[in-house]
Image (cartoon, helix red, strand yellow):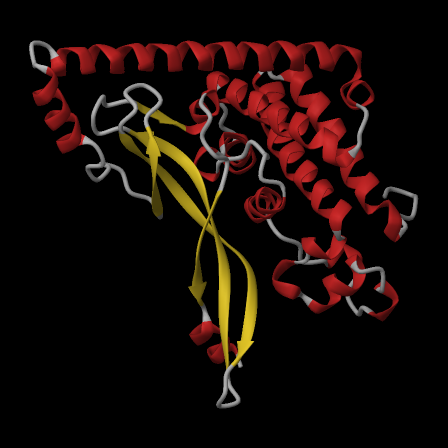
Amino acid sequence: MGKNVVKHGQIKRLLAQSAQWHAQRAIQLFVSDDLNEQLEAAISAGTAVELFAKTYLASIDPALLADKGDRDTVLILGGRGALATADPLLMKTIGAFDALRLAKYLYKDLPWLQQDAVSLRVRNAAVHMALVRSDELRFAVVQMCRLIESLMAPLELDREHFWGSHAASVADYLLDEAKTERARIVAAKKAAAQRYLSRLLLGLDDEIRRVMLAALSGRPPNTSIDYQEAQECPVCGQQGWLICSVERGDVRQEAEGDGGFSAWADQIAYPYIFECPVCQLNVEGSELWEFDFPNSIQIEEEDVTREFYELC
């Protein structure tokens, strides 16, 4: 760390300090009219998100940061660096997306949707092509603030110390503004769904209404990702669908009678879109947080025995 040596027990602190610097830098510069300062803010916003997710993982076990079980990296991050042959600067660690997916798996309340990785998207555009767009940059900084605020409690970090007096007030404003804007959008979508439902049922007697609702309720969704879960619509009370992406979790092995084994992986579905086939309510991304939808859903295990046999 510059002229200093980072002890193994200071990995979490090192990552948190760097995330703090980048987060404060992003808040300081994202409103600038100077192109280079906007590019710097974009880079810092995405970097703060990655480093803070890695701070959380390191607080559980630094070895979680090793990419694909790289031997020297596992030794270094596991506190056995003297046994490694590679220099610490050559460690192979997981990337930002993998770090955030793993953090989401371990901390279900993390406000991260991989389909909406705006903070990483703007960082990559700035780093690789010197491109930045003001509206996307603002969304990226809001996402950065939301993720950092979410991880403050499990990391037991002092909020005021992390942000500093100036950045804390800006973070508060951005989060309040984003929440208010999201609530306005969701309220408009709910009103539109209620109007659609009223027009659909206008002039129908009770029996025909019941038949109509029964025929429409539970129809297949228009969108498909990895998995859909039936969910009651918060507007019309009929069956809609949570459209989810699926992440593989822990793997367990079971011995078989013939001396072999079977392997099964946990699967967790993360809701991204809600669709109602009756009133046409459609909300996605962070808009789901305005309703009492689950943050994650444990689904049927996946048989990964063949993958394990191929590895063997």
